[in-house]
Length: 504
Image (cartoon, rainbow, N blue to C red; front, side, top):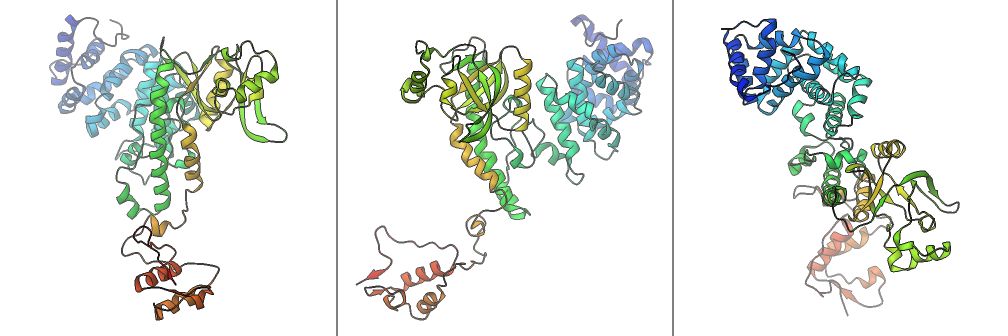
């Protein structure tokens, strides 16, 4: 029987395989080279990975049997077949396995007879995609082992060849694991495993601990990611004990506002990329990069890639003169709707998203034959993937996404620039009844007016303020004016239309 068989071939073998697995655990059948494959296939035939894990842990022969069976065959065929299937099956119990699963996996990789070969096969590119995913999940699990020395696994994860292969994988889930491994390795030892896995960073290529590093426009991996975005669930309590309350406030505000934007984008991006899906918006097939646009000599703009269409827009057909085409794009309602300035577009290959960008509408280029679109990109990951795909991918299409990102982008950009300071934050954001009110720091000294009103609230103000008419205040009005003159922030309330300063 070949070790390539990763699961029972037919249902009639399942009961026998299950019995062989349980017989080995009970000790009634000794594990020998001939029975190793049956034992491992019997493990994968168990109905519930969590129950299977419990049976292995409770058995006096369980851990040693798994350890021996995984080291019996070290061929690439075993790594790509039954070996990775067993590990993938056990890792399905990761949500409930806890320390029991960690202990079992540790016995698989220590001594590192199997693990060293598995790592070497990945580095050499000998593993198929299923085995690569299992390797990535195993490595991320080993990096978070508690009460064990994780140095050997950190050394493996830190190898550039390992990280680059994971992050550059064509399979989305493998890329996600690569970003998680990179995030775990970059985290300090003082942070708990729970915080590393559930805090900010590591979900995809646009998820970072510092929100200022997050590109405003999403990446393809971010849109495809099924994990919930990081938001501060106990935000109020965190602010009271945080060492950086302003940055945490801005972090939370940025992430929540951006999540509103992403929800709309996720909804809009599905229809145009589905096979045969009807889409009313603009879809341009066959775009290719022909250069970079930085504006004109007298008006520079942020750089963008120039994408040439393979055919003319149907709205421009029949308009031959260049000046007429430009005039149509600028002034005609039909032309002005074509790729509005700062509208969101998606580059895709088939049903696979490449990246997102915003349009820099240059009518002179759009009027070319064929039209040239200027696309501005945001974020290192987006830029690298876009430029690589435009060079390597045969057929790239551009799809306009009907989401008002231009309404979000200025606010999100401003939040980034104000990440450490907000004017009047102590009085407006973090004030409570026990907070002292700070005095006003005006270049013009107004203390003599405030002091005079404190001494005599009924004092006439025309003499102090050099007013042409007589002005007098009641006690409430005088108190409000003094607060406005002395405090950095004050609130003056009154019924609609009431005059706070009465004059005669």
